[in-house]
Image (cartoon, rainbow, N blue to C red):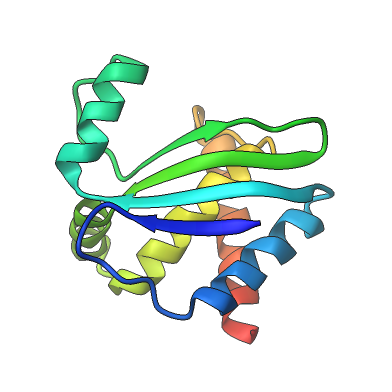
Length: 138
C-alpha cells in the first residue's frame, strides 16, 4: 500500500495515478509492494531528521528509510517540497517533474540502486528517466 502524508501545506495531484505508477515500478524491478509512506514536509522538518538520524547538518530534498523485508518494499520517504521547488528552478525543470523524479528516486533506492559514485549516479538517473517515461504513458 502506498500512502501519502502531508506535514506542510501541499497537495499531491493525481494520487491514484501516482500510486499505480509507483506500484508498477516496484513490480518491474522484481519486488512486491509492501507499505510505503511518503511524507511531504518543509525544509525545517527534513533538516531535523537529517541531523537527528543521519548526522548531516545540511538541507536535502529527500530522506528514505528502508524497511524492506526480502523482496517486499517497505519504507518511509520524506520529501521537502521547498527543496524540490528550489531544485526545479536550479535544474530548469517544472516542479511536478522534479517532484516525480524525487519520489521515484526513493523507491529505486529501496530496489537496491545507489548513487554514491558517478557510475551509480548515472545508472540511477537512467532508471529515473525510464520511470518518468512510464508515468507519462499512464
